Structures are given as structure tokens and as C-alpha cells.
Image 1: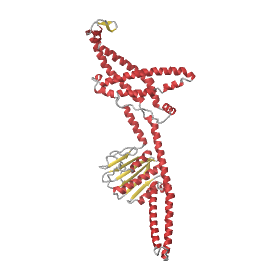
Image 2: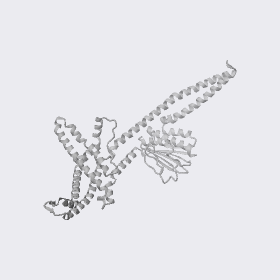
Image 3: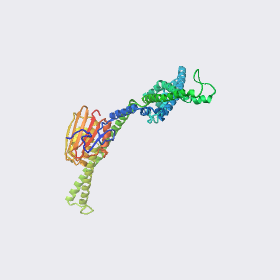
Image 4: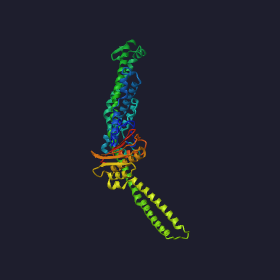
Length: 489
């Protein structure tokens, strides 16, 4: 019996496929699959994005001496100036709404105003995320759920229940004000330093008027203003670094409070998983209905037709043996008997095909007797000798049994059609609450898991059950298909 580990080291020149998200196969590595794994991967990716280095800080580290004279420094000052204006406007509006809301709340009119204050983080956060595009190449995603077609009441209720709404409000009320004040201070420093740089020109332009750059100390002429120019240049240089550091702080706080988090998408992922499970259950119910209709309807009619044709053939055979003839001639009974026998054979062939179709949709033995009996029945009909070794504690959940059964049938079908195998082994056990099932054949190997649609369909079903499906097929064989799925279904 072949190994069940699907890794890149033991595949040789063959293909190793690990089914991840629905309909995904990897050619050289093994991946754990399932909805839970997808959620963890998405959360890890989001955390990685949030913890990535800020573009401004990376530029500062790359060129620390030249940074104040680069375009990145200008972008920082534009971002800080825009943030300062946005912060001032937001503060004035929120203060006015809060005062009016509290004052009018005694008569009930102020409640909508207070609700507007609670939701003020939504537009403020959206504007801050757009403003971030000045310094960040990658935009901060909107953390809110899309609500297409929802009415205003439903949209309002949803936004009030979202954690992202309250994080944006916290950013607007608690984080933005000190950052706005710091931005205003740095902007004032920038303007004052720029004024000092051009102070000789100002003194020359205003002469013979007295110019005092420092209160109480007049500047006699342009040459006496050159030290102030040096101070202004130093202020611009240091301000460039200070602006980069303040921009870095704002960007990191914006990512933390205004961007999506794993818990924001957790409910959506859970609902998506439930909807997929409901769709799978509905599909399974529809498939069983079709199987039942074919078994109890068309199949029984074909059985009755075969019996009727048999009776007609028996009657005609008796008349032919007695030498009877009808008005059509002496060969009438014999000719009719040949046609009836032909129709009876075709009806029997159609009945066998219908039985095979019904068995492929959902075998009755799987419903009545469980996975082990259903796999044993498939093994008896398989053209290649199949050794079945299933040691199960009893009946498993319906979705688990169905997934395992069709995994086995798909593997056996591929072994018979493509591998040239002379023997197949089906091994299955339940360990630590998981069904571990492996189908191994001694064929030529080199199978490509992504070549067919059968395994991709199984991948969708396995992903719903939070399991994993792996294929190992080195050149020269053996080929092993391994299924691991929780028995909780």
C-alpha cells in the first residue's frame, strides 16, 4: 500500500496536487484546504498587509539625507496640510452637531443630530482613505460590507452594528485632533522657515523700512539676514524629516482603525460557508429526488415493458410451434416473434443503462448500508482487481459518506481508464474524528490533477466539509488519492 503523504519530495517527476479552495490544484506543493483554512489565510494576508512598511518611511530609510528635497517630502506636506484642513472642518462640524444635538435632545429633535455625530466617522474615514493616496501606492480597503439594493433603514442598522463604524468614529474624535494639531504646527514651522530663507530678499525689498525678524531686533540690511536664511534652511531640512515621521504615524493609525480586520469579514465568511452548505444540501436532495423518480418511475415501467414483451414472445412462440398462421402469411408469427425478441433485448439493455445511471446518481446501498458496503459493491463491478480495507466504527454523517463514496468511484474510474493499473487498494480509517481515505493504484503514474473536472467537483464538496483532497502521482507510479475530512460533516 502506497504512502499517503502528498509532498514535493516524494513525487519525483510526477505531479502532486493539493486541493485548496474550490477547484484549485497545486503542481508542486501540498496545501491544507477548507473554509477554515481559507479564513485563516485571508486573516493572515490582511494582517500582513496592515503590518507592511509605510512607503514614506521606506523612502526616508533609503535616502535619509536627500529625503527633504524629494517628491516624497512634498507629498508628505501635501498630505499633512490636507489632513489639517479636513481635521479643522470635521472638528467644527462635530462641535456644532454635538451642541445642537444635546440642546435639542430634550424635545427629541436633537436625536437625529446625535445619530449623525455617531455616524460621522463614515464620511471622515472615507475622506481620510482617499487622502492617503497622496503618500501610499496601495489604497486602504473599505472595511464596510457592500449592501446592494438595501434600503436606508437596513443600511443604517447594518452600519451601526459594524465594528468598523465605531473604529472610524474613534479615529475621528480621538486620533485625528492631536494629529491635526501636530500637522498644523509642522505646517506653521514650514511656512516660518520658508520666510526665513527669503528674509534677505524681504529686507532688501522693504528698505529703508525697518524689518524685525526677531521682536526688538531690527535687521539693518540683507547681509545681516543671511544667518536667518541658514536657520530657515535648517528648519526646512529638519521639518522634512519630522513631516515624514508624522506621516508615517498617521498612515499606520489609518491602517489600524480605518482598514478592514479579520473579525470584520468573519461573519461574512461564516454566512458564505453556511450558504454553500445549504446549496450542497439542496443539490443532494435534488439528486436523490431524481434517483428516486428514475428508480420508481421509468425503471419500473421498463421492467413492466420487458415482462409484457416476454409474455408476447412466449405466446407467439407457442403459435409458431403449433404451425398457426394469420392472414399475413405463414411467416407472420415467426416474423413478429423476431421483432418482439429484438424489442425485448433493447428494453433489457435500456434497463441496465438506467440502473447504472441511478447507481451513479446515488446508490441505494450507500443509503441503506453505509460506505463500506457501497465501496465493496463498486469494487466487485470494477474491471481491475480492487482490495478494500475499510475499518469504520459505524455509519458516518451523510455528507461525509457521499463525499467519500464519490471520491473512491472517481479514483477507480481514473485508474481503469488512464493508469493501466493491475491492482487497486482502498484503505480507510477514522482517526481523531477525521475520516482518512486513500485509494492507491500500481499504474504508470504521471497523472495531472488539474486535467479533469471530476476531481475539481470533489474539491468543492471537500472544501465545504473543511477537509482536504490530495493527489500524488510520480512518473512510473504509484498514484495515490488521499481524502481527509472531519466526521462532524
